Structures are given as structure tokens and as C-alpha cells.
Length: 239
Length: 120
Picture 1 (spheres, rainbow over the protein chains, first blue to last red):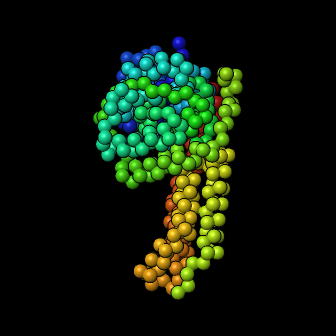
Picture 2: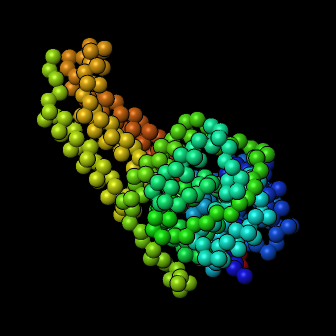
Picture 3: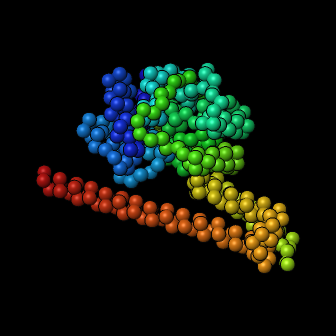
């Protein structure tokens, strides 16, 4: 069986982190996990220490991309076969990890836990961004990605090595589109996600506009000019 | 009132194209983060539009009684760069305090390791 690492980036998640990690430990002890505390200013790190969770405690805040990359470096250096990006706020459900693993073992490089593969995407203002990004990816790669903004993504060994060392490999839709264009096999698996039960959402209007500008420009323009460098420092394990 | 000559418009177009080419090359070589390239691409786009549609500068010049429309172009560029400078200044402060925190963390860890070695 493939050795999976669940990477849980956490920034100010004191209300959720214990519930999320305890659920993983008790119901899914077969998977390894690591919490990446991204310089939280609340009790996230203290709670993890008290409960004895496996945690990497970043001394300064790096942002989601930097924190997630830390987890992938950990996975690469400790011989994991694949890694899963998993939210610390309880939106992601661990019962969908197995179906995603199965899909990965069928030969996918990246598996996205998608909310809208068999379920219709609601036509709401909140989903407008998702529609636009789906359209941009379809336009530039020809592939339909139903839920590009889903934060539940699984990466195989080659991908996690590539993500762990390179610049401009944030866990975002523009990286996905770039990799599809470069021949990576990206598949989706239908999942359900909960609403966040505690804590604040990161998104507001200004951030949403900023995010969409970045994703739009990045997917439609910048990705055409990028040069892929797949040389890995973890040579002995890559195929 | 002096207008914006086609020579100046040509310089603006060339300037914006060179900016785009340079920024995309840096991204291609993985020497620049996409986040940081966005500003320069939008800035180049703005200069490009302004040189294609100088009527916009004429309009602003009329409304605010500028001496010449070209001053609108200058002022707009100065303003955008000042705002950018302001945000870069904030970013620099944050990076400075992060480096300080990191340096202290490394030094404190070293000290801890040394002390534990002595205790053994």
C-alpha cells in the first residue's frame, strides 16, 4: 500500500485543530499526518504539543503556499509515496481519502477532491470565481476541472518532489493548469465538504478580487511562458 | 495646449512591451514569484492603454485643468509608483522583523543544543 502523508497547514486554528486531528488519529490510524503550524498567534501550537501531535512549528508566518511546501518537503525527505493537502478547519472529510488514493493508484499524478463532479455547481455569486477559473483552465488546457478551488488535493511522489523544491508551485488552480499543460494527469473524485464550524474565513471582497486577478492573469497569460524543471534533489526515488 | 505626440506614444508602447517581456522572462527562469509579476504586468497594460487611447489623458487634463495632457501621464505614473513604493516599504519592514525572529530562533536553538551537550 502506498505510504500517505496528510499535510495539515494550520494558521490560527485553535478552535478546530484538536477535533480535526483527533478524528484522523482515532478513525484513520493507518495514515500518517503532520500539522504545519504557520506562525499562528493563538494557541494552535500549544494545543498540538499538549496532545502530542506530530507538528512542524514554523517560527514565522509563510502563508499557505509556504506552509504546504514545508509539508511536502517533509514528505519528500521522509520517503512518502504521496501527500494530501487537508484543511485544519474541518471542511475536509477523511472518509474520502481512500477513494482519492485509489484514483491516484490508477495512474493519476494529482487527484482533486471535487465538490462538483457529479453534483451540480450552484449558480451563486460565491461560485462565480470557481466558474471563471474552470473556464480559464478549460480554455488553456482543454480539460474540464469541475472544482479547481477545492483545497483537498492529493499528489504522487513525482509531484510532491516537484512541488517541494520549486518556486511558483503554490497549491492553487494556476499550478494545476500549468501542470496539465505540461502533461500531468489530473483527475477528480467526488467528495462532500462541510461548512467551516468555527473561526473566520480568509476571504473578503478585496481578497477575492485580488485572488481572481492573480489566477486570471496567471492561468491565461503567465503559464504559457513558464519553463518546467523536473530535476529532483531526491533522485534515488524518482522514476 | 500641447498634445501627446506619436513619438511619446511609441515610447510608451515600447516601454510597456519591454516591461512585459522582461517580467515574463524572469518568471520563466523561476526567478520571480507570480504574485510579484502581477503588478508589473498591470502597470505595463496601463501604459499600453494610455498610449493607445490618449483621449483619456486629454479628458482628465481638461477636467482638472492640467497645463498639458502629458502631465497627466507623468502624474499617473508617479502616483502608481509611489503607492507601490509605500507597499514595498511595508513589505520590507515585515521581512526585516521576520529575519530578526528567524535569527533569534536559530541562535536560541544553538544555545539550547550547546547547553544540553554540556549537561550530558
